[in-house]
Length: 163
Image (tube, rainbow, N blue to C red):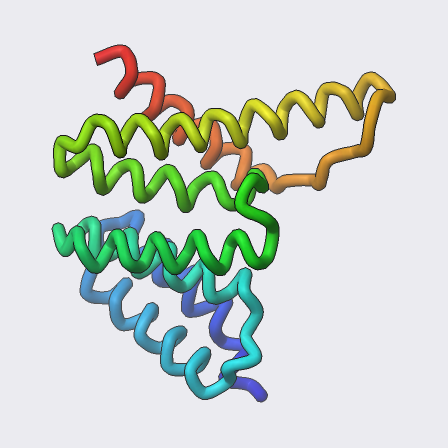
């Protein structure tokens, strides 16, 4: 049982090392997380999504774009299974795919994925505002980290669109 509990820590360490551009170390932690998930197939869709998203980020940083797209597509599958394809927690998955297409200079695909991200965030904010005004259902809470990530994503998309 303890090996399965290590997976979130491995994913966090992988993310930290990806952020520091320590790709080899990030890959080692992702491999450990992957190995533990393979040994415990009952790992949730959320964990699988996170694993695949981080593998995608690693492959994109290594310019292994075909593998990055495959990992992000798998991330979207698991994220959609866990939260729904239009959920705010699925938006970063679409964004990362858009970035891979952007690095390939595929403007139409980049624009389509970025538009999807903007629509998801706009819908989330609209629901949140309506709930805040007492109209409609309260949307789920998102963490401060997710808010920061959303801000960075929107900044990137805005800069891309302004070019």
